[in-house]
Length: 345
Image (tube, rainbow, N blue to C red; front, top):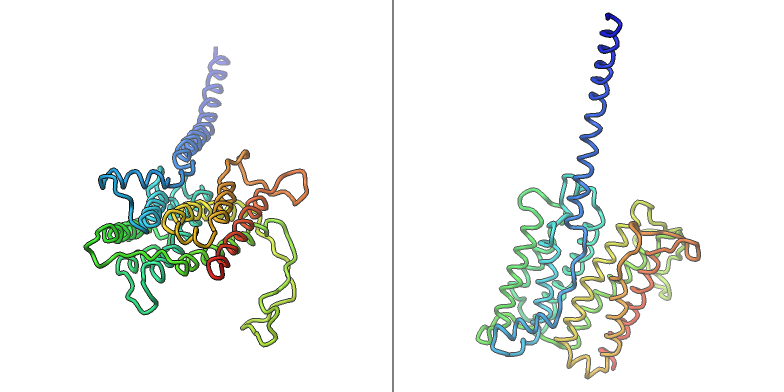
């Protein structure tokens, strides 16, 4: 009988030891499953603001009246910022708690979209909403542009979201003045030089992002900043050539930044088609604009892999970054063509 008690005691002690070990493991496993489920909430990327919807909603609110010049661009800027900040799952760039702090793809996408919103707000502040270089700046656009340049990773009061929502309020104020024909504030000048100012910022952004994407594969780059100008100089000495390579852990971040940039850029170019339609038609630039939009739409195609693949140029595994770079390079070439048409055409 004593042997039976000893075996029972040994069994209970073993069961107790296993529970001590298994309970934390089970708890951790359940926590990971919960984090995964929660992470699915903001995992999808939102749709681009529709110009048809913007037009139809304005006409419904104003008895069939057509939107004034500049309304499409302004409303698209407002909606794009609102989507980035207030989408399902909220704004993630400044989250410091798991699981969202571990999700870097969507914050990278937010960064790209915000940079493009900042570029457009700068063009609107400095050029599009001013009649001439000596005219006054629109006060709402000044405040909106300043607010959009707040650090996106700031989470403590005042948070980045609060500043961006203030920028949206300022842009809505500008929009109300734009619609109000009796107001002396809130104008929009759809001239070719103003369109050039906005497109030049887009071209520089596309060129920069395309270089970053191409660096997913190591390549030697020549230093060409001072080329063709014998009198030029720079503050720092540079080697004739250097090898550029994006760190492996940063490849997906660069890819999704580019995806966010092209998402916002596509929305703004579609708005430009509405507000600068006479300029584009006069310069015969509409076919080039259509081609740019087609190239940028290709950057928004669905990924058929759970991760951003980073193979070599002609290897067995595709390289998503190089594919994205090719679309952006062709779009940039089209933007440069439009700029030349607007200036010289």
